[in-house]
Image (tube, rainbow, N blue to C red):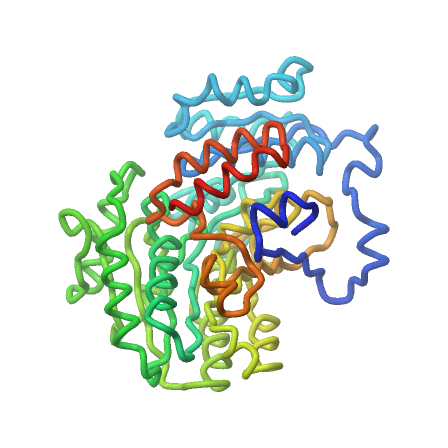
Length: 451
């Protein structure tokens, strides 16, 4: 991205690159691209897709990937949370349902268990938690734990997965204006509180430098952004228990938002639980490193790679002048981060919404240590051995971006939780996606500017 004039206009200043696995050059990537479509007459059987309950686009997107990338017919099992959307999903997937390539199923965990173990199912793909993954692959209780330790699965077929994790946002110290701090702390609040934190890619921990002169100003603005973000109901099962668990682990944590529904944990003495527990809800932490400058980026990469659980995505926020001053040290930071999506001055969610980009964990996980999952989805170019997607965005919104020398016309993004016109801009974007036209762009831009 951008692939066309519409990308350049509607996501001005944003870009996405696909990086290949080590040892794979461009010629090999081009030669092997296409996956199962290189031989579309060869079927790969029946794929069971276990849909997610948090983001409604996941189930149909995963179904399409199974159909085209893997040439499998699909039995899509909906998460019970999304069962009310069965008529919508049926309408969306109707062309495939009519030819017998897709069947949509509903029901509880018993239906999902029956489906994945059915002898006619050749492959399983799921989006969810590592706990659910392990229950499917190894079983539950003491017997499941024993099987996992011995790597003896009960599931007799291959499984791919996208399982979330604990995502960091690394804030590289630099000289920021008060407007920069306000915008970027609202950016971080969005990364955590979009969909009330019920996103696999939600940022959970902000990594900052204790030596940053603007540390206190940044933390004050972050508290304000978390506190003032619009309230959302705790609709996802187990949310209140997970928030309570965070409060129990960190009794000194701050409470923000309506009725204190949000937890903010600042510089805890023991950061283990914060970095190893995916709270999947309105819980945000801040950890501080003693280093500064180039030493900070090296230490931040080490902490993100070695102490956090999961490898789905990492965000890096840095002033353009700081990026320039760090030079190769900043490039090395991006290269060293072992994550499936790395976002620079953007949210990794932009990688999710980019259809040509890959979405999934950094390669290398195995079923008995699955972390953020195995394999990728989306991957519009059907690349065989992708390593990661690297997303870049403007440090400032328009018009401040242009005033300060960034050629980016994007105002505050519509996915910001503080965007006042997110709904109306979203409706215009959906209408545009159904039938793209340059004549529709001005209305979208005007609506976005009002956000």
